[in-house]
Image (cartoon, rainbow, N blue to C red):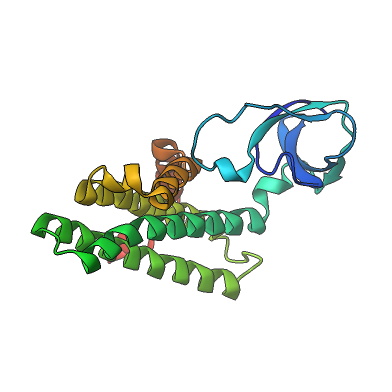
Length: 226
């Protein structure tokens, strides 16, 4: 295996890694022993403050031995890929809750003005809604882990879109309600905001929404006939 693999979390602490690479025109998953010669993390390749604790670096691969895991294309098509996408969205939700707790704590300590309280109310509504979405998705996965009904991809795209939108709204509303003070004086809050800002970009914004629209158009959304 040769090339540069970006965004390798745990680049200097993991003993083994699962890495995607091209096999002809398709992507394929490979297992790699990190300690072997030719696996070289690139120091300084992650310079932003967000998610700095994840030890995410680019890694040079030069003649690295790798064991194929599954057939070409199987990595992206297996039900577990889609189920895992919901798991990432659950992490976004957790990050949004961490940011929102700063606003809730402020409301319990001080008498916030009506505008800040309105932001808190909106944050509560958004987080409660996506909590229900995640619970519903988890129940659906438990009921059909092998995706026999073929709805895993659509379900995951919907969940990720809903959670990303809510989490982004939480970032904006908490910032507007509390101003710069917690970003400058509360290290835990500032780190939570920086981490969530980076992590949310695993959702590819309008590109992912367009893909969701295409899938919804080709199928039969539950809301279409109500």
